[in-house]
Length: 377
Ligand SMILES: [Zn+2]
Image (cartoon, rainbow, N blue to C red):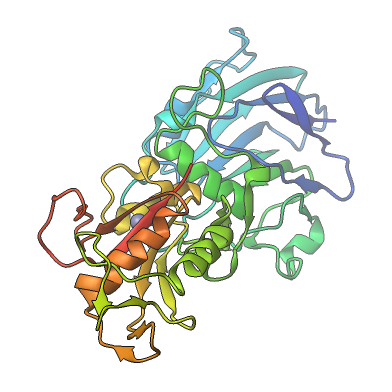
């Protein structure tokens, strides 16, 4: 029989023989910085097999895949004439002849290859690998049609049923492979890893030595926190966003109104306060790195929004309340914004920001504020 195994960072994650009646594709959490090792053992006396070929396919990986593959053991048993064929992002290594051979391959750190860092308001497609070992006289075509993100720990069971309807809500692959004698495996990033991959793509570290930001752990990624996810995914980072929002609003309501110079606003010698039912709109909270670029950030990982530790606050229009109960007209930029900024300062570092991201409080801009930016550590 022939067998096929994959190790990720030294850990055995797939071990398959071609006599397995119901191949299971093991999906595993991974990033492109992980080290994949493929072990192939072929011992097929069956004369119908003139040879075997290894198939690996990586989507969403710019650069040439054959450059990303290196032999590990230095003495492969591949016969002379073996071809490493890179067609777009697909690699085929042909001519493993029948007999006891082994070969170990590993992608180099694919984080070195170009990955998208442009601004985007759409989620990245997940990275995925298809590993296959199949007879040379068969053609194989696998076309992904729907890369619906998978929940963590999902298993896709395939086999002859793979040619029919895929498991509901998992992933659709239009496939004409899995002929008898084919062994393989699929690794597909779920939504959590697809988001974590963005941090790696933007230069965060995935392992020691940690210099600067590092890739969030899987346990750091949570489902969307209400409206406080202004990123591209259904998952996000959250460093107490709701608590800080609620803290600002509590500090804002009933707060004494100040002007841009910090002086208390008075009306007929009465102090003026923000009404107890005043409201604030959150225009931005958590942003994933590509979304952060899309809104104009020059330093995507440096923004606290990317770490779930910043809010952009816009005060809804309100009148003031004088101590005698009378209503006082307030001016949006002269009164309401400075008062909201002071309320936000109770929750961290806050300033009025213009629509170009300039800090008005530091005198970087004479424009009107677009929002109050609040961040914390
Ligand atoms: Zn902001």
